[in-house]
Image 1 (cartoon, one colour):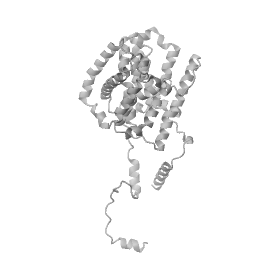
Image 2 (image 1 turned 135 degrees about the vertical axis):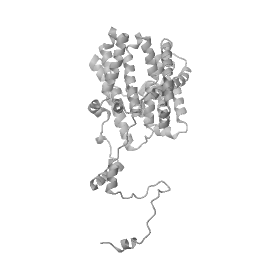
Image 3 (image 1 turned 45 degrees about the vertical axis):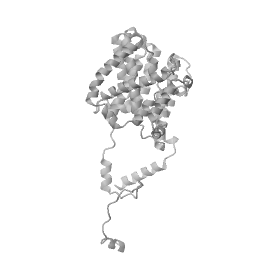
Image 4 (image 1 turned 45 degrees about the horizontal axis):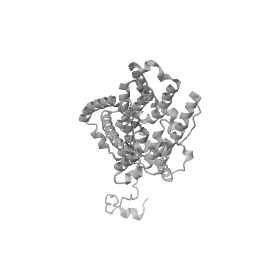
Length: 392
């Protein structure tokens, strides 16, 4: 049964195809058939890039190895040279990737919620857990404070500040020079103090902003064959310089947590070292990225769990220090140093696996639906999705 309007419609000329609106405002939604909805539902989701997961995993392995080397490096010039080279690029590489994946961050409620549950909550929990752990193992009376990041938790504070200020860095005309200028000023400002580890937040800031400014093709440039070949002599030269610099340079420069005056250097050394270290760090980071495989490997899936490995391995390193495990004489010999290196890599690998992530997800990725107001737009999208699913 049909009405007069539909009858006359049979003799009308067909409508022209829909054109996108000139002002960018979407018009009414075109009805979607059940077959089309089924087709869309069967399409594969957005796939993770294996290169970045591989890079994050390899960087976090170097972080764990570096922490395991700290109690041993004083007895080996070679180990301390390697330690210096690794510390010059492993955190910059990790921070650049963090900045690259923060490019889309804005003040949208769901992204703010994820920032709180994925950064703020783990910071509060682990900033409390580390001193409690020390008190339990050593019988000390370490106080809990959320203003002075303890051991590894500084990165969570920094990530929170960096990501929260991302809209500003996307707004200004020259974000990288501005961030570099702030880092240089921080190195001549000892009055900043230790609250929230703001020295590190500011001194590592240029790497995060660089990641924000980068595009996928920039990572493709460093993965060319000639870069991979050139990185071998560059790393060899870096190791030689690192060995030479051991008795001549304060390793604390690579931690980026102190002003120049606090390291016993003239104030003008701060800006100079900021530029020099960033130049060295970017060269070695490019060499590191050149050797990161872009294909899917056995450790690619572990790249999604690097925050777990980062925060959890600190308990084991500190336990070894508290119990005096690193004081064993044989560990301070070459075979012992190799054993510690392999063990650190194996432990952090296990801590990035899916079973460990399931156990500690309550602390790293809590949902906390009870703590947030429901986003009306998100609820509407969810209801629409349910209706389409039911109609199919």
